[in-house]
Amino acid sequence: MASGLPILCYNLSSQKFETCQNATDLGSGGNIFLSDEQMTGCIGRAPMQNGYKQPWDGKIYQSDSRPFIYSNCDSMTLGQVLCRASGKDILDYSAVNIFSKIGIGGADWWRDSNANAEQPGGNRLTYCCVDTTPRGFAKLGLLVLNKGLWDGEQIIPVSHIEKIKSITSREVEYNGFDGKASYGFHSLG
Image (cartoon, rainbow, N blue to C red):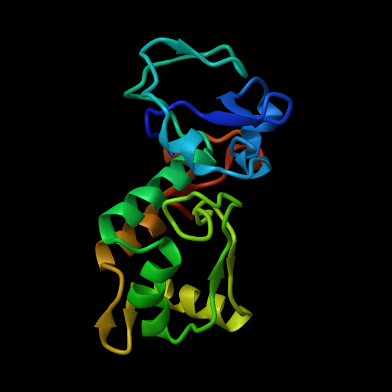
């Protein structure tokens, strides 16, 4: 979540995606969950210009060196890139490539309310909202514990598992959790 794209917030008054104006909205990842249609504003962002001053902290950031800032739009954009590249939304992709291989059935992934989305039925909310059983989440944890290996099949590359497990709070500047959270590759460390 240091994409070089600006963090956007959804403004309920104007019903538009705009630059976040305060730390509270920013702290919720850009509060895009308030919008019925969450993809267009996220995927349509122009890259941040060098020397851009962020309204919430007054700091000036360079587009190629922006520190980690929690951004739901970055995850939504990544989900759409995956959808366009694979031809499957994130739930279908995960069902084929992960869930079915480790015995998770009946998982669901929430959608926004956009009836005109590229993903039929609405855009999957790739920043959150996977529903499965506690046993299903335990299986995902076991997959990580076993370095991506399940019943002799390498489901997730070992190098990726090792990278997400080795992220430290020193690598991530974050204003929550007393600055001690580690987050990277879209995984909490």
